[in-house]
Amino acid sequence: MATDVPEGSVRNILEQETLKWVFVGGKGGVGKTTCSSILSILLAQVRQSVLVISTDPAHNLSDAFQQRFTKIPTLVNGFSNLYAMEVDPKVEGDDLSDEGLDGFLSELTNAIPGVDEAMSFAEMLKLVQTMDYSVIVFDTAPTGHTLRLLQFPSTLEKGLEKVMALKNKFGGIMNQATRLFGLGDEFSTDAMLGKLEGMKDVIEQVNRQFKDPDLTTFVCICIPEFLSLYETERLVQELTKFEIDAHNIIINQVLFDDEAVESKLLKARIKMQQKYIDQFYMLYDDFHITKLPLLPEEVCGVQALRKFSQHYVSPYKPDLTRGTLEEVQQRISILKLQLEEAKLELETLQKGKQDA
Image (cartoon, rainbow, N blue to C red):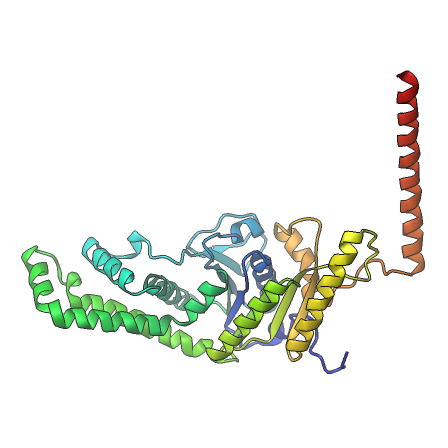
């Protein structure tokens, strides 16, 4: 492989001191939450304060850190500068000030797909911007949702047009109705427009930041399989379309060929994985590609996350390499054990026959 291939780690993200937003995304079930948790832990070592936000309705952040998180940023146990929060990408009733506005907005959200998510995202960004975190890591929902999140300004634009049309058509009647029922000014179309306008401003402001590679980057998470390769390719193309910087790919669940593997099934899997890994390197030769090993257990809890984080900073090397003296010795001791077990099994069978 050429020597000018970017390093296979996330060190470049840790070294980019100007970064404000780090998105972590990919297909469902490829380990996004573990990756965003570890990235936030690593960033907390080099940055003043870090906030990790889950916008995935499944909310796995609580599982990853084994600590309950809510929509209020909470300090992660064992840290002094790492906070986590979980946000539902749906507008909740109590986020809206009152019944009439609630009813009107629900009408609006039915008319424009995605406007409810856009509005709750805007509310969250407004909240996040009032807090002073050096860097914010987004553990995003599966791919489709993430891309919708980047289209929010145009979604809200449509929402505003719809409200304007309604205002021109029914504005007088609506304002009369609000007065008639003794409702306050907050129910007027102008108040509703103001609310939407305010959100649109926040989203446009943040979107400008999202398109600045000094401030924002997107980390694509995948596994070495066809569907995941295809999904990653789609994601990278969409990010390019939205002018969002991406130059890191993390490939999870990799079986390493050097590992002393005896199972035929695993050997076949290694071969299949290698085919897709080669394609990743070919397609993304200017990306930092980090390969992470498939583990026999889940990475849960701060201790496990911290331990696994070392493979994000320096490329993973298997403990035993095929063909070395240590590996041969280990295989001999395993074979001896297996032989002993087989002898015991045979003796038990023979004894059973004699007893019969």
